[in-house]
Amino acid sequence: MKARVYVSLKRTVLDPQGQTICRSLAGHGHKLITEVRQGKFFDISIAPGAGREAVRSEIEQIAQDVLANPVIEEYEVEILE
Image (cartoon, rainbow, N blue to C red; front, side, top):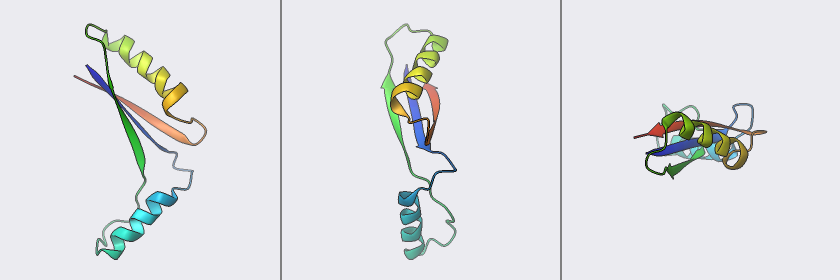
């Protein structure tokens, strides 16, 4: 089993890197793109035999305490088979 944690800036936080990417895309002729928000993700391997609910709980705690800065970032946990 694996878990993936997506971390991105909150909507209320300016994203200068995303803005730069958006301007670059427009400069390359991609006129349909109106906004880009950048982020990161973490793929985490889980020990065999771990229960799905225990894994979700532990990964949520790790995301909150270690992977994301809750002041400016939000996160989403996905459990993969």
